[in-house]
Image 1: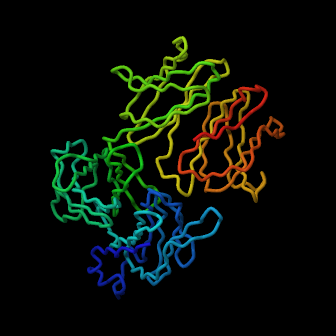
Image 2 (image 1 turned 180 degrees about the horizontal axis):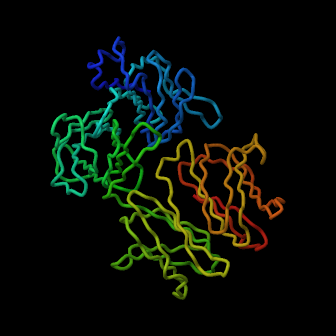
Image 3 (image 1 turned 45 degrees about the horizontal axis):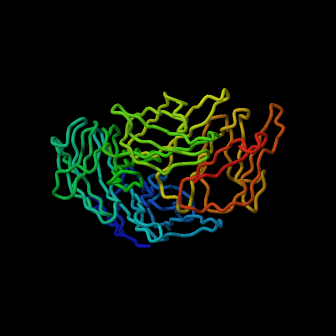
Length: 452
């Protein structure tokens, strides 16, 4: 683990340093504020603790709540919990937190040896406008940062600064009348290029800076299907992080065939120009992820053996930097239908995202328990409930061994065991799809399929 140097903005005006103090008072912000942002893509959920008191936890791309503390020296710890339930400290340091300042702690890089950066600045008492700081969490890269008014093309954007890994800059407003550090509250667009370049490698949607506050804009890597894999996160004094994917980014999808047919099926993804992608799938098989430009697509399903049309009006919407799974199934009338859902693009190193789909029309409101070796149904920490037919529910599981136990309840809350598995190791770095289906060999039996 590497500790990057603390970045201090404008503390000289208070007569403070990172290690000093002042007799000056700050009536508007009489305390010190601390927040944690997780920009380490392969990290586990990480907790911020102040003097062993938990402030909150953050996964990749999220922030903890803001906590206000009296000026003083505190023990600041970042901690995560491994698959055996053991706490692991990433860093612990004694830190002076000055009155009237905010410290944003940012974790970047590889979680096995992360960088910890402390961005420290005076909090602003603003009557109008906002302040803006930018920070790059993208290893081994430097970018030119351009900002333009909402809707403006890149040719009308303004070069603001260059950004390098683990460096923060306070940004100067390109159209200031008075104080160049106060930006006008309105919508803006953000562009990134290589240093000195004019080819846009990232373009944001319009970003609405409508609060009278100190904004921190974090450029971070993503793990989606795009070529540059960049996102911009807007951090304010709350857990609400607004994330902006690259408007130029592509998407990806995969298809699962749950139909019990002797023939393969062809799943044709159509755009306005015709066939955009095709997957040939046998029963109970899943395709690899395939890239596609973002957009709206028509889904046609054909029986491969005789070219019979099974479905011709399905819809698949793919947003920028998004991964989706398309499931082909039969409804209660044996008509072919599709459903789709978004998949996580996060690395599945320490925790694993499960999407659970109920494909048995006779059962609604199912409960699937994930039961570890030391647990029972009553003590199981993880479960998905309200599993109606053709619905999708999600859960995130830490690496461990689990029994999968499926329960149905009738209107009198009498429980019926539908399925129970052996202990299954969950540790592969991939997205898991779990389907609840009838056994094709025995229609009276329900099975739970774990597909990856």
